[in-house]
Image 1: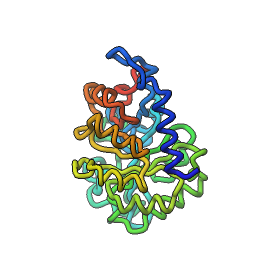
Image 2: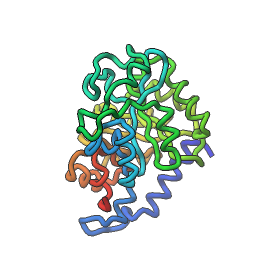
Image 3: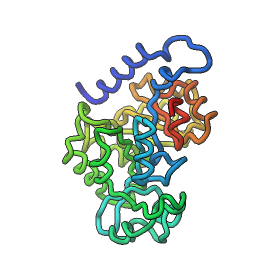
Image 4: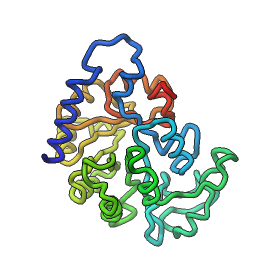
Length: 276
């Protein structure tokens, strides 16, 4: 079965049997809410430093369905997990990620800014995250500014293949980016791994744009500010799923539940899963 058919069938099946297809009271129960994938944005970022082992471990403890990570590359070719293209905001260092060697990046403190209890948290490598978490939690991999790192798509694909994570029957892996050309490359390199496109731009929600995305993407992941029920229905009609970001309030989480998205990407996993 092709990837697009596999995903589309899964969407149809989940919609057919999902409690969301029935009529509910206004307040969803725990069981109903768990129909939405709970994606911990850069880990449990509301409570621990982003893109660190401490943050990802907490997300697993909080029963997130996925952790979302950002992948870039050091000057000497090591894939590392950090969001900004500079280290200034989340570490005690300065400079561009791509201008620093792995040794330099690894020596930085990526935790103290969030709290003294996180002092000394290092910047993880991409492969460390794959090895530590596959089989424990899904991993939503964002290629951050891949245009800065020529060939990073192949490098990421090889790391996934080495661990036999490139087949749908294995652990949950999704790859996403704001760079659509990069995602077309990833779809070719890993044809059985779900691909996501990220956007906050309304021009990417037209019927023509969504149709184009559906030729290579399995997930359409917009900022929640542009989510409507019509958009969710359009995405589903094209066989894609929709995951929205970034939830930092209970009100935003409740809005996305009402919109019937497939995944909520949040700094606070407990806003999505009331068991926490």
